[in-house]
Amino acid sequence: MNRRLAVVLAVLGLALAGCFSGSGGDAAEGRLRVGLSFPPTSGLSPYGNEATLATRLGVTEPLVTLVGGTPTPALSTAWTQVDPSTWRFTLRPGVTFHDGSPLTPDAVAGSLNRAAAATPVPRALASLAEAGAPLSARADGDGVVVTTPVPDPVLPQRLASPELVVLAPTAYVDPARPSPVRAGTGPFVLERVDGSTGASLASNPAYWRGPVAAPGIDARFLADGTARANALRAGELDVAEAIPVSQVPTITAPQQVVGVPLPRSVAVYLDQRSPVFADPGVRAAVRSAIAPIDVAGTIYEGRADAAAGLFGPATPWAAARPPHAVTPSSPVTGQRIRLATYSDRAELPEIAAADADALRRAGFTVDVTVLESSALEAQLGTGAYDAVILSRSQQLDTGDPVGYLASDFSCGGSYTWARYCDPATDAILAAAGQSSDVAARQRAALEVEGRVLSADAVIPRVTERARVGVAGGVTGVAEDPNEQFLITHQTRRG
Image 1 (cartoon, helix red, strand yellow):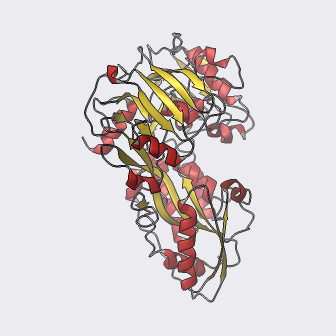
Image 2: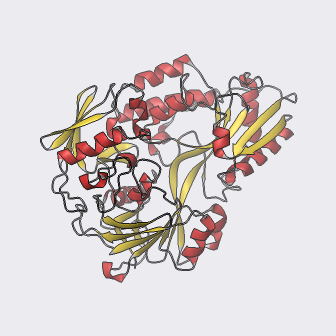
């Protein structure tokens, strides 16, 4: 069995071995001590960014999970498209919520309908909500029927979102802020959330995938990456997410830092409507000037992957990309470039400085601006900068590459830093958007990627990795490129 297959099986709970090397141990040997990077403010409510905290701790589960972008059974065992706007999901039998109540079609439909009515609407449903009506679900025999306001060929992928997990009816005492405390279906029961500092969890004795290896979890929410690394080194944590690159060399055996390829790339976006970059030859000159910089090997110290395109190792289907045309460079005659990035990710200002130096050597005049991400994104699409350096996920919310490309590189996209607009590209995206065939959508994504790269609308620099710190003897930690799962029913201390 290869490593990637082992990882997939561990995430889905179908493998017998853990993902990381180390000695085994039975559940009586200790609770797991886990450090997460995002302090909650809403008790791990699924309606917002805290939703992934609950899935990473093994508390909540969706109907569907994504493996390599392909929807895979979870609380639903199968699904069929009844018509363009209607899908039917068969529920897994014998599943119980943490409060002891059964997973029923009515409970599932109730969870989905409440999520669709939430304010703000979950990101995975935002495009449907814009169509003028929310998603709706109803019980139907041993399953649920889900209806969308417009045809939606990627509904199964949407239902993999952490914001659309299924909770027991008791979770909705406060409809605006549902609580996963004793209301999930995962391997661990959330017993208590201690504000923004920590949480306590017990193992679920009735977990549907099988016995849970650890007796419980003591979770700590530590926003400071150095603090997480220090706690791992001191033996205070068994698992610590998001170890900063600068801290990786200080973590040595028996602890280790495991790099998990992410569907996230760092790239330079060149504004097609900028006076300096309206010329494709000048855009090509930028690409040529910064190409020699080994961003992955220097700034990321070998803990990222040099980018071959927009899609990287976390999306293995992208390895089949065909070659794309390369535009020749035009002479550089001192053109001024306004280059911007944000400070929230420590590596991005370093990339901006290195790229600016290379561009100056090539003959450009470069002004560099570094802002917080919220301030920079407020200027999205305004033409305030000629080039921006961003870290961007290709699998936001649905794991669908066509949706990501339509958002970033269609004429009517909502996240168009490059302000790229090409009717032929839009036609490819529109055709792919009507297909429920995952492989066909991936092929279309690679075709669009080639067109965007040929135009030098974006210059990929690296694809990122998650850096998970793991104590010696700990096994069964999920290597999930979607960063949705971390602790599974197989995770244990040796």
